[in-house]
Length: 426
Image (cartoon, rainbow, N blue to C red; front, side, top):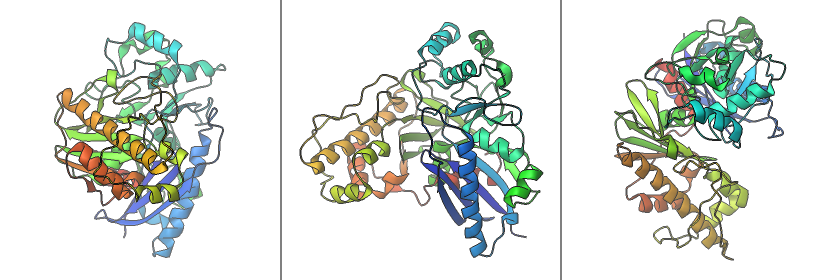
């Protein structure tokens, strides 16, 4: 009997899925956009609807190849790190969802600062714990039972129950993957700690799919659900071999940096942190710069045409910090960090050259920050995400970083999460 692994990636722009066979080869993929929403008041049920839309397309693709949804033996989900929502016991959202780049929670940050250690990942007005406190305050009817990260929310709907997370998604909310515990001082902030999920190792088996959900989706009742991970870690698993010094830059809507390390390297003051990945650590962080800025300024056709006119061997004199709005996470951790995209030349080729090179410089600064804290510099660097398709940008980044870059054979986070669950926890 064929046994397939299904990875579900909840990205910024939509949902992507990938199905792998027993040897890890990609059988089929699918995608679906997110349901249009007011970004100031996101309904997490929109994520679940997008997943169901994507699964419908995925199952059609499998059917065309002679496979059935019942051939899927296991499912795992990755989501944007730090995105969360509060739900009741029936998994209905009782608050809006707050995204990974939500910021401005200064009152909550002040409370956290009074109780947290001097250096801690939960400090700052854009921390995940600050978001959790804000959501709890917005639950005026006190109906919340579960605090669920984005991947947790979809996993919970597949399981038919909440209360479980993975140690990758839980890290930014304050979970310590070494002690395997939430900090005792959380209760002093006023957080209802009963809302917190129980994290397990990323990729670990959790339990069977909800029979009702299996019937509605057309899946086997024997399908097993595994703990997820974050989108950037899933992208790493899709792109790179599991060897020390292997690094991945994910150039999607934002810029995510990961490098495999023997030691845990953390510096929340610059947005640097390490996730547990089996016996190793993935050190890195995520910047708010990236393809989202480029997409806001140029169409895909313009980006391709203008890039072809750039000489990547020449350094741009323009010094930008491309952001869509104030606020940066890594390599500068400052919720008020201002975008810098002026002066803008009259020539769009020159302007784009400056933007691309400036993002490359930020990428280098990210890796330099890891090395400065005792981590390793990359021995091999792969690129994932849409930016990997731009050959001119790749050549420019290679010059700035001072090393050859490799385009990953697989770049989709959905492939990475599917690979992870094939082996349970690494």
